[in-house]
Image (cartoon, rainbow, N blue to C red; front, side, top):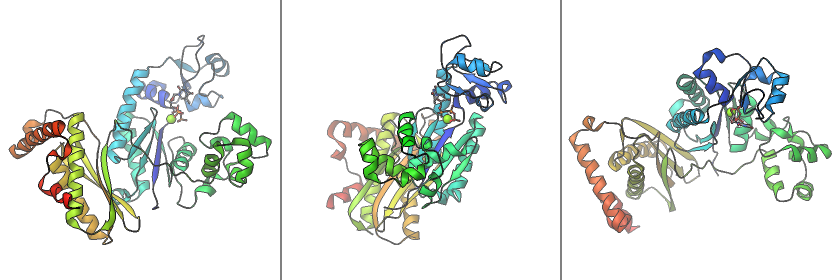
Length: 390
Ligand code: TTP
Ligand code: MG
């Protein structure tokens, strides 16, 4: 497998940060979201100033009041947090269509190959942090690593307002000195059992023989062992109802054939375009993915001056990127894919489109209707029809 690069982005003290962004007077103060003093609720989150007094998520409010009576307690406004979360995910989707949101304030991005757009992946992470700060007035912490679990631990370790890049091959060494508890999925119980065995750090866990782990943790051991060693094969998986849409195809045999490549890309662009129109969304951000015969995988992205949901424009943009990819690496191609991200509802931009685009828009809608009725294969365009021969 080729080397992947994964980013984990997590907003700092999320609920509190939203309150502070909406009311800057709260900045720099001990703030708790999660119920009024005297109530029976628990702390949802606490600012770093409040954490300094020992406050943390899930602590009963009564305890929090006792430890830090001067804290400002706010009940919180979940719909407001959901609204900010949506904006946060939209920012991330602008950077890569390979986005997997986790809850409200964190997400994984597959950024393999994106260094070409930003200089380095670290530079890309800095840009994401800046965008989040400018648009939302919230700090994001970011971990960069070859897999999800290490990226997540890295973003946690980097807090607050941090950025940690774990070099490829250095995963196990990065995790080794950290407390067992830092490993996602390790709760109090696992921690206690391991402590009973004299295991306190992730490094000690990584060196434990698998059979010894199996006798105590059963089916959970394999994952525990892999994660402790910085190995996680779970890919970043964009959800179905995504902020991005993509299609990819692996060829039966690696190919140089531009007719097959462009025909496949055209077919994928038509599927992506049909999905966009069905969702009522448009995009400015088009990317392609190319995996070469030696499994090196690149993604290339292009930003359009104007939103579109047209197959022809998605295809043409993707094809230009593909041609550049072919020009820079002459190997045969194993996989090609196309994706769109940063989706949004079309504004009232019809007047900006020229006549040709308006006509294409109508044509695409008519094709969608026929395909709805008779299936996707009912209409073949000039390029996809060539695929029939393969
Ligand atoms: P987290 O990302 O776990 O925490 P956080 O953003 O508050 O702080 P950090 O800087 O350490 O990332 O959770 C995100 C939000 O989810 C958090 O702001 C409030 C909510 N939450 C709860 O309501 N209860 C909980 O027990 C936790 C952990 C979080
Ligand atoms: Mg957070």
